[in-house]
Image (cartoon, rainbow, N blue to C red; front, side, top):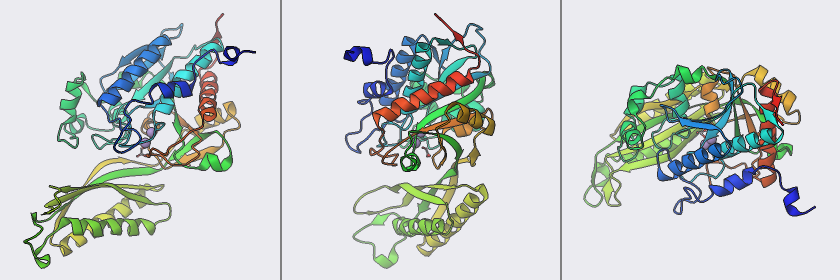
Length: 418
Ligand code: GLV
Ligand code: MN
Ligand code: MN
């Protein structure tokens, strides 16, 4: 048998991932930086549109910037749809797979279904959600929050990126009318269930020696912005005893956050971003902004941990002659995925173990409206939100195959063509 005879009759996830491997590659940080509405993210959206179009899917972008690609059925009614997909934006300097793997796998799953001669009776669509990471405007899962009405569109219009541009202005400059963002019941009412395939962001599958898992729950998490206000001054002329330096307070607060989180089993607290203002080597900062990410399976524990972080920060700031402001940016409760959908998936992919995740996903936001589920694909490093995120080619294809098996089971009695 020649090489070409051994190739599948459809593309591969690996091939699609290679197509986009240069888009948004970040020479400075390493990995990928693909913030929402950036050139890189726009290029990825065009790529998706082109790939979905090639497969005969009907592609459009809705008022909230969510891309939908519909595989139309003979019935022609978009209701009770089986939807899969993920996101294309990334954290700064992120890995290649967080988000795009779910989108590429969805496209290949459709190829697999077609190669099996299946034409769905139940509508099937791929969704691509914008600003899942919240890397640009601070709120995670912004697209799915807007769709479901989980966030006030007025608040979203006024969100600012690091350069002070509002969401409304950036959206308008990118062809989206910000007046129309918000809860979209007509879109939501079309959906029957959502299943998101994602790279595993831990080593569960590696340890179990399995390529694909079914998700059980998402850890509750939130983000807070903590600003420490001090007195900006000259590094050479201000005596140590005369300073109100917010950097010193910020450093002590940071250590306090780690110590507070360590007291709770299963808690995670992170400061991954800190910005002194104005930020000069010979300048005592006038303000320091830091962003705090806190997670725990029990929402009441997240709340009390955050309360203790807040109180501690206020005390430390006062000791340094500084003040603080502490504001929530986004909050997501712990989500347990729909048990009957999970059982259905277990029947369709019996070898897959059940795993939970500490990472947030649009599937978690949609879970309060429709049954949702997730599939995780093995990541041998267990590392994510880093260029070291990794997947073996064979596992990517195994993931798409499992997704295709899941979708073909979920679309019910499928009509075979040909
Ligand atoms: C998104 O990946 C998150 O968990 O913050
Ligand atoms: Mn992520
Ligand atoms: Mn993700």
